[in-house]
Image (cartoon, rainbow, N blue to C red; front, side, top):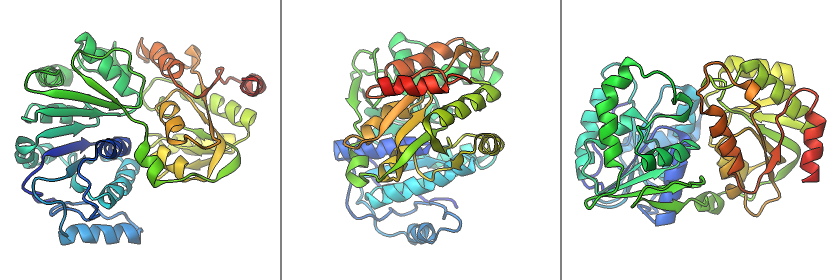
Length: 405
């Protein structure tokens, strides 16, 4: 479905590629009271594909196609979804887009990766909007798509919202004047595509530095130690999530949060399986909330070997946990949720516990910085319980350490 041009004025244009990014744009808009009309209707030309076998989703998509009146020209927030191809991510993005529509925002769905010509069509269609935008909000400054779009915009205000723990690395790299590269790739050899794209990446990094003509804000729930001069850092307390959902009903036992560290080549798959089995046994975990990037084969193997019920959420975990039901203890490896869940679950009795990554779990291909970065994610988390590395034979000790703490 190819969207047409939206409303004439676009003072705030947001680009998202993942459900978490879209959630954090909603949090940013709520905190700044930006773009909410209360109409709950999409703007003309928004093209959100209907989820399969979901009547409410299909009904929403029908309303989108009908071109119901949305925010007036010159008002509001337009969310541009640069859709990936992964089915689970697309499903979560559709659900998040529905929530954005309910908040009165305009949503524009772009099949940005739908074939070789898709990037050219997408960028060509977005260029007029970028030229008019006064403010651009982005969820992933490491994205080549976003970096390319940054070279087009004339916006005087740039905002970076959380894309998980990558935000910590982004701000640190910006402060040190380093090239923008994801932490799990740092230290690796630059490929031909990296070298070809280097001028665009460098231009985007310069755009993300404040100047007399441009302000830069980082909206984050992550701990940020190094802040570039002139960059405004605003705390994300998940006020929108807490105002819209919950408090949750709590269940007995624990829930375990999955990670994509195996898929990104950082952690060995068998070591990860052993750690999940040990954690589940020690803490009485019953459910495993899969990360959207975890492979189906890995999840099937995990369910058979551990006996855990694998749940593939249709929304980011912060919303799933806030809606409930959720276990009284949530177990996680170093990841974004050890920072965000305590904020989303303020006022509840849910405890979040994080298990360190043992250096022996790392693969030979892992970045030299992997262990230090993951340790930093754990060490800077607030309001969580710390668990030792979950290895066979240490599960009971882990439970005792947690209880004693």
